[in-house]
Image (tube, rainbow, N blue to C red; front, side):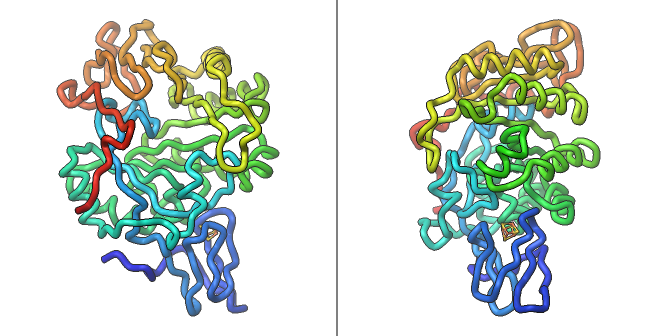
Length: 361
Ligand code: SF4
């Protein structure tokens, strides 16, 4: 059952009344009665508890393209939810109303893992997405749901900044089928000053996902004018992706809007996304997408062998779907990812305007 005082994993006592949380690289040392940086992991009488366990800030059915994932069950709906708090401190956070909230501040719905899975099945979803705030900080709850979901034939998607320790990630990703990992910039300076975290652990997570797991993953970089959108930085990021992860890892360049503590920067112009896409293609990235704008060309999956347009999209909707299983129908090249049967692809899943809000009731 959901509980406000669910004992956390990944911690140990330091012997001075403090507990060391080893879930994320922040490695908070937490005194009795206090919570860590993320607000939801708290030292209660010498034990670490996770206050977010069993508490969702609301459920929605989203198109999987909104996560964003373009090569994982495209054209299907995923049950999406988050809790409160976050282990990063991004000044531009686009979900700050929940990431910066304490769980007590949010109107939350209690949901045992079985209830969440039942809701996903009832809503016709292909997967459950742990998203909105970073699910790393409520990994215990995500794992417990994912285990039940897998038994029920559902997939599990982790939407994350990838800021997690080696100790925790093996256990967490054991239950995940796909991930979208934010690579928020390609400079330590940006990570340190704008996200209050560090770049290197994120790179380590990405390399580990590629080399040590079967988890399908795609990368998202939110481009912020003047902060992480220079030609040089984008080229360095793409060169690293190609050499460390391979050319076939999809990358999404998405548009920022002013939010939270960063209201002094303009929205990302579409031309910046196009420029980033061209740099990535020149670097050898084979699947490069733009997001948060209408751009059919920048959202189309193209066969890198023969140039055939395989999946045409407009924002999160699919206009045409020509995949033959995992293969290009023109030249029979294999396209990396997990693709559904053609009859399971819905073109019209849109989560706009709360139309797809769903509830456990
Ligand atoms: S998960 Fe939360 S409490 Fe644990 S180290 Fe990270 S920020 Fe600190």
